[in-house]
Length: 234
Image 1 (cartoon, rainbow, N blue to C red):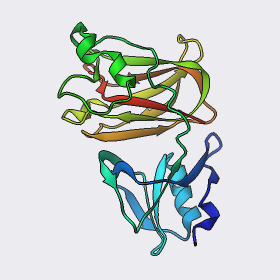
Image 2 (image 1 turned 90 degrees about the vertical axis):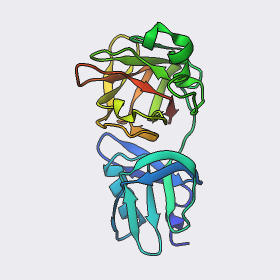
Image 3 (image 1 turned 90 degrees about the horizontal axis):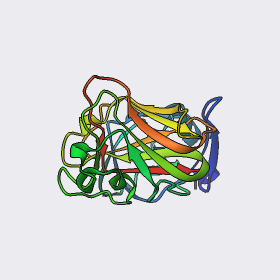
């Protein structure tokens, strides 16, 4: 009952450019590791910490007034921890599901094994080394998804590959465009990623666009690969 003030939905002005709604979330397949954790004065204090870190989700221990935020999430069996209440941003719609996509290249020029369609097919499991999107080795590989129409984007979720080589996902710019030509960066993942990691990037607000692109921006020899991408709208 102590958390009644935010049980349904709570709104936080995270910064001058970001504003989001958080609510109580059900159990998920995302197991948090390497979180920041500290005593807080209240749930609102905990939410503010998560907001300042541009987190899509955070955790509050109501009995001990402890906060977990800025976590790394791994895709595992359903996570249940009765001592921690899970708060997150509402997942209204995955606008990337089954949408058309193109990339700077496809590994081995073989879309049947590593094509862009695997990035938006709604499946997180795959055959080892295949049935995921993978580019060729490039300086700045990219993949672009075309949404139905210009939409206001809340956050993007990427499922890193689960078998090995999760560190290949690094220095990734999350970019939006109205015309598919001129792009603006609206989020960034430094990494390197962890094998099996679920990466969630909260976009600056407001972010409106029809074309979303992920692009590696650092290094001279990079291969962009991951199992799935989800784009959630406001």
